[in-house]
Image (cartoon, rainbow, N blue to C red; front, side):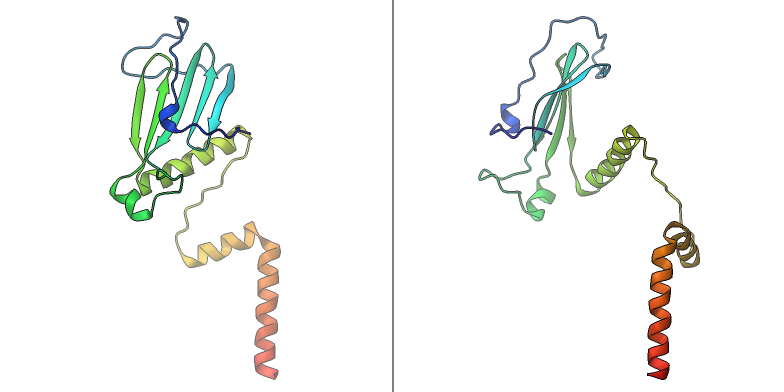
Length: 160
């Protein structure tokens, strides 16, 4: 678990390492993850030792100066920035809009599950009937419970 610190995203400095073991060009960040260790982390940043290099991410412009989350309106007008930076001095910034954040979060959730060997089932549903049939197969006990309560309710209304 990441330890809590009083650092902000602006306090993060990734010192370049003098290693030449990870080849990189100016257009891409190359990450070697054969050895990984969290160096420092908070809710708005994390720094990792990966192989012979360092990698950091930080989220800027998410909280106000008093440490509270900014309002939805403020975030929409001036969205947070996700910065990913490598020890070779390369960095990339992403504007965290509502839709971008939603899709990135879903995809990163899938990646996290994959690391634990959990495969997410994604079945496109064509109709309401397909959704009902899928729910019967996915959760048969819950379906039987709801169906039983429905039958009891109907009997109570008819013979009531």
